[in-house]
Length: 208
Image (cartoon, rainbow, N blue to C red; front, top):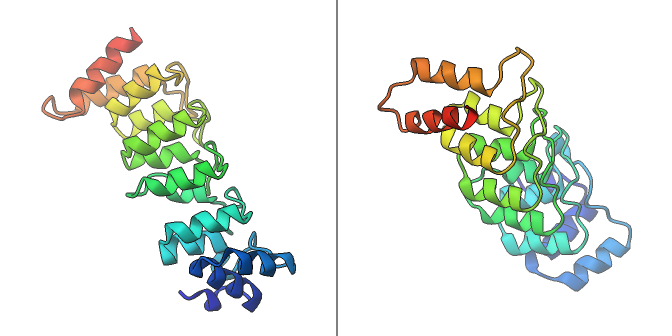
């Protein structure tokens, strides 16, 4: 959708200046009281509009330089970090984190950003989030931390890596299950030919 369909004219004008790369014009417009940390129609923020609709990294970087808050959440509860973690293009997460995006941002589903990267098996995003300070022991609604969530998805290579990087392997979720129970359950139904099987065994050995 065009910016004019979602935002008021003053916001649209700033976004146009940003897309043109005209920093001085955008600064002048913002100095007149235009705020880009707002919700447009359908709850979208100007920053997320730039990311989703223009896919213009230079424009997004300029918007962040001009003071757009990377941690401002859309109408559904997602910040830019939540929205780009796990995306195919790793650059988006780096751009947002470089602008002080919160690596522990909690999104609309009550999950930290790293859960999205785990779900999509985006190793570069997982490692970058950890490098930038992601807490691997923040839990989601069902009380799973990063390692237990990855185990829930049968992504045991990721589970192994997360434990080695500080994820608590003794945490229990709201059903009373822990990692030891989950890996045993997975091994009981997983084909030995599965690429996840040897990693599940490694995790089990790690827990002994």
